[in-house]
Length: 449
Image 1 (cartoon, rainbow, N blue to C red):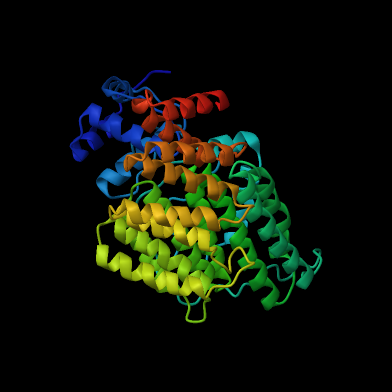
Image 2 (cartoon, rainbow, N blue to C red):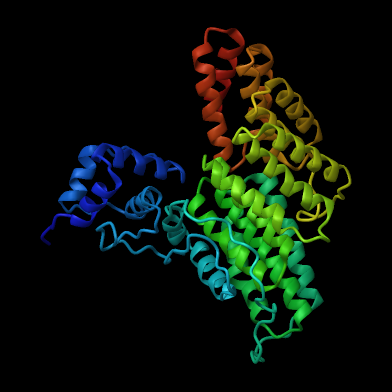
């Protein structure tokens, strides 16, 4: 097949005022957000300009790169890559929909593909899409009712709602105990099969609202699992879907919780202003009746994003409000409580972003003590952050002691976040390798690798 020069890509490079090298670096950076190590350079872009088609998921990464640069949504076809259809057509919205969407049908399709190991690999290559302001809560919308006329299905009721609640507790605990890579296929299959069947089955409006809320929480957990494994593009799609489900059943608390997660994801990927917008939108969306735990959860993330932008006074004031609500919060429900250890970690993040390493270290020490025994992933990441801050503060011996605790806590976890934290710790330790404690910690890390 004859190759034709890619005139569309050439025109976009001119519009973006990019050299081939600058374009290549930007594509590498977008790939790094989803855990891909790409080493494209100016010659790679020259090959694309001559008509070479890169392998998936690179065409979608290139499209996202130009979307960010030019401020409009681009597709692989728009950048001159004509044969780049993914296993599942991506959601091209800049943000979640502002009108009711067939979220249950979308859930069945997306989760069904995700449950397949081959197609899951293709989904993992989707880029994180950085365009789009946070949505406002849409007026009107779904009733939560599904499956009118589907009399071939058994009627759903309290038993099905209780089973979905139990699934939420089970998969949330699996994430904490084993990491995001442990139960992803099982949860995707459960959503594609059991949850969607019940959402389509006949039942009263109250039942379907409750089923929709619990399904939104399960989608939220699956998004966190993917994010924990570095698959931020597909995680973002699931978060958009959780928003749609929350709107269809008119659950503003679930909507706000999901916006808060989107803020955390954006901040993790260094999209700080976007993170700040989503965190504020989450707080603004909270219904008046929401409990103290959910309010503390949203406010704590807003404080972190404010601190990340240098808004010191605002961040400390919002953090104080989060702590007030946290002290009054209950316990026992994955989406109805906010563990004190998690809140202390967010407090540490606020102080770290503001440059107060001593206050951050104190909050992290408290977070370590407060983490429940089953939260192995949370404990490991807290210890990793403590190690980082102690090294930055020059407290090498203490940092190494905590580093050993981190390696112990992180052992056996299937978590890209933990793997990344180990690599970061190694990079910080290697320049200090002459120190006996550092050398011992590095040797232990290598023996575990």
